[in-house]
Amino acid sequence: MEQDFPIREPGNPGNIITTSELKKIEKRDGKAFGDNLDFLFGEDKKADQKGGSSVEVSAYLWRASLDTISFMPLLSADPFGGVIITDWHSPPETPNERFKLTVYILSRQLRADGIRVSVFREQFKNGTWHSAKTTKGVGAKLENKILIRARELRIKS
Image (cartoon, rainbow, N blue to C red; front, side, top):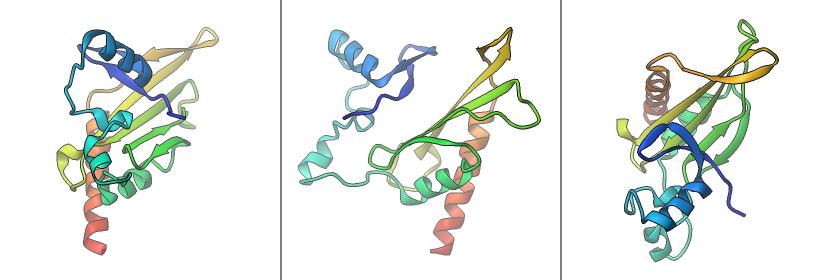
């Protein structure tokens, strides 16, 4: 059974859709990205040609990502697709605010462009949670922390 992950809608990055919704859009309109993002949806032709499934992401980035976001509850982790999704986490100092992360590992090499972090924030107002803007650069700061940890792991090995 394939899992559904939240992603930003191509051409409308302010809108969050699921991977199954993106597949429907691609079927209807044709692929928006060619084969560049197929690994997110389990359609990696290269893996099929190798004769089986294998981890297609950097082990250092994977381990560093899990280490860096370990303070948040883990909802889903797919080492083959390179996607880590956390559950909502409210910092003790701000109980009316919560965060959720999606980490995408995009490379088998330890590279700065091999990691992408999406940060989602909600605020509790009038008895319900509402989407809120995140502070600019939070995703990039997390990406840098992951990269620093990944380099430390590589040096130790």
